[in-house]
Image 1 (cartoon, chains in turn purple, red):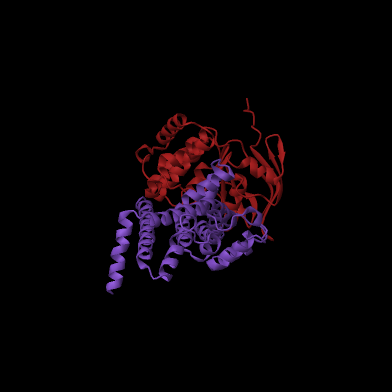
Image 2 (cartoon, one colour):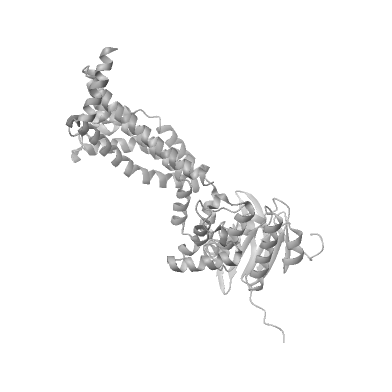
Length: 233
Length: 228
């Protein structure tokens, strides 16, 4: 108990003192995950809209695939991306393995199904009259799509936050394709795994606190946004 | 001297529409006059909403020869032509999650009007509908009657070639209903072409210049005052 208390105090000290190693790990984590979400979210939301608002052969199978792939473990995604990017793999010549770009690719693959499935659910539940109203008032289909997305923004924002939560906390994929190299590819989850295996809990606790704080911030922001939306209704 | 008769706004022969294999509309000939109110009556499920959505281009007919003025169009081209030119109002209208002012200016923005033009047009439209006091109110805070009037104003401001109204007075209190009927009367006297799907006896008896009844997907003319 005393050891845990000591580690917690050390963790706070590391955070407050601006420890270079710790903050570089945090920077790598946010940089990689924000890039992954920034690329995946627009693609996923448009794909979800197409799945929710159009009808074509194979549409149901694609929705089923997105729902199924949500549950794929991060290590399996990591293994797949590793095989693609390794020397012998089809994208081996790009020499991306153990770089942040590889981690971004892995996290995109990881969060895309979750984003598509959650955004699809949000758009499916949105009021179809918004789409018809926009079209009848002269909006182009693309403009009408943007209007529908604006109307369903809280559900879409929840999808993005959930996806960000998944990628920033995943360890398996980042470890496999990033290699956990300090100042380059070591992010919060891989650092926690490494430090814990070495019996050094202070940094792990500090990084865990950052993740918890960020999750609290995101959920508070979403709650406030939803609250102001509800207050207007 | 007899006033010259305007050519119809729209003429469709052998209009057909099916959901999957189930044919829900089969109309031999439908003529929408260039102005005036055409009242459409029929039981629930008779196809009134479907017909209005076809005329607004929100649905594409399965078949039929469409004539818009001098143009002969396929059902797909007709839908493209009608969308944005013919405005459809839902029975329970949808207002976007923004202020009344923003809702009313939505269509103008889509037509590329700048902010100053929109501001002037919206102010005029709010005056026309007697909704000035609601301009900044969030649309979600309105009563259903107010929503319907805002939706009507949002459509009116675009000066559509054809206004398609689905049971417009069904959710209104007496005051909103009276005001809406006045607005429709004004629109009609101003030369607008309007199709109203309704069960409202007052609209059928006083507003409709022509009456049609839709029974199981087929149209029949109705003599006003007599049951369909």
